[in-house]
Each structure stands twice: as C-alpha cells, then as structure tokens.
Length: 71
Image (cartoon, rainbow, N blue to C red; front, side):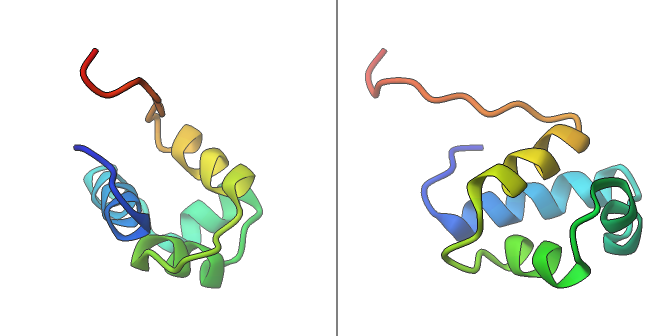
C-alpha cells in the first residue's frame, strides 16, 4: 500500500492490527502507548509522534521503506 498521508498510514496500521486479531487494548499493553494514541494514529490524526508510530509498526511485524520516486 502506498502511504500518501496520515490517513493512509493509519489505515494500513488498523488493517494489520485487525489481521492479527489484536485489540487496541492488547497493542497498548505491548507498546506501553495509550489507547487514545493508538486510536488517533489509526484515524490518521496529524501530528502523531514518529518514534511512537514506528514502534507500533514494528510490533505489528511491518517494515517502513522510503525510496525515491521513479526508481
């Protein structure tokens, strides 16, 4: 999935969490992050902290990549 904004980033995280049958409460326990943060992240709220977001992605068994367009 191509991530173009906070909403598509959050959608990808929510889809993966549900695929793994994790609740936000379970993910909160695993990461130490609040359910409110996780909810905001999944809804694509602007201004979410990058480090925390990367932590969630890692726990969900996903990788982030950045590459130049056209390569």
